[in-house]
Image 1 (cartoon, rainbow, N blue to C red):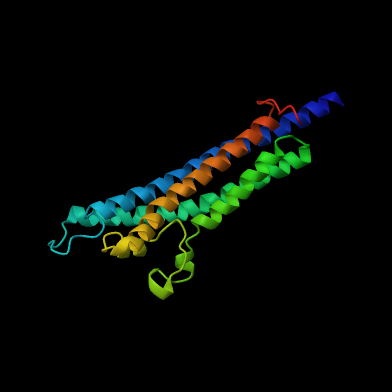
Image 2 (image 1 turned 90 degrees about the vertical axis):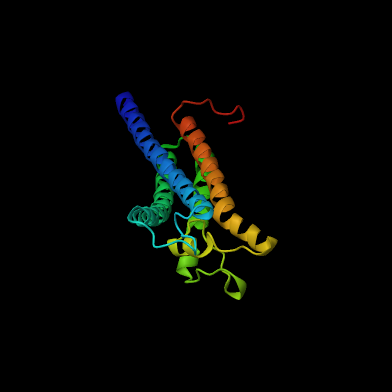
Amino acid sequence: MADNSLATAADYAEALLTARRARCWLAAIVAAMLLAQMAVFFAARFTAAVVPDAAATQPSRSQAIGRLLLEYVVSTSAFLGMASVLVLAAVLLLIVNIMLVGRLIGLSDTIKALLWCVVLAVLVFPWQALLNSPDYQGTDFRIPGVLYTWAELTAHARAPWPGVEQKILKWTRFAAFPAASGLVLLLLYLRSGRGLQLALGERRPPADL
C-alpha cells in the first residue's frame, strides 16, 4: 500500500514537472512574440524599413527582402502569440485538474494564474481583424487586440498623428498595450510558479493553511 502511494505521488510530481516545463516554454514564446511586435513597430515608426519615404526611389533588392522578412515576423508573431496563449491556458487548466485529483495545495494561486491567462487571451486576440475594421479612426473605431496585423502597421506606423488624442491612441495601441500584456504574463507566470512550488513541496505553505 505504501509503495502504491509513493508511486502515485511520484506520478503526480512527474506530471506537474512536465506541465511546468511546458508552461515555461510557452510563456517565453508569448513574451518573445510581444517583444518582436514592439520591436517591429519601433523600426517602422522611426525608420523607413517598413514604409519607405514618399520621396524615396524604388527600393533596392535588400530593402525589399528586409521588408518581406519584417512582414513574416509580424504575421508569425501574431499567430504564435495567440496560439501560445491558448495552449498556455490549456496547460494551466491541466495543472489545476492534476491538483484537484491529487488534492494538492497551491490550487488557489494556479486558478488565479489561469484566470489571468484568460484575460491575456482576450487582450491579445486581434479583434480588429475579426471585426474587419483595420481603420480604427472615427465612427468605425473598434477596440483592437494587442497583436496587430501587417496592414495596420503599414497604415498607421509612419502616418501623421495629428493632435494629442491621436498620439495617445496610437502609442497606447502599439506600445502600451503590449507592455501591459507583458505585465499580465509576468503576473500569471509568477502566480502559477508559486502554486506549482507549493504542490511540489518546493515552498513551505503559509502558516494559515
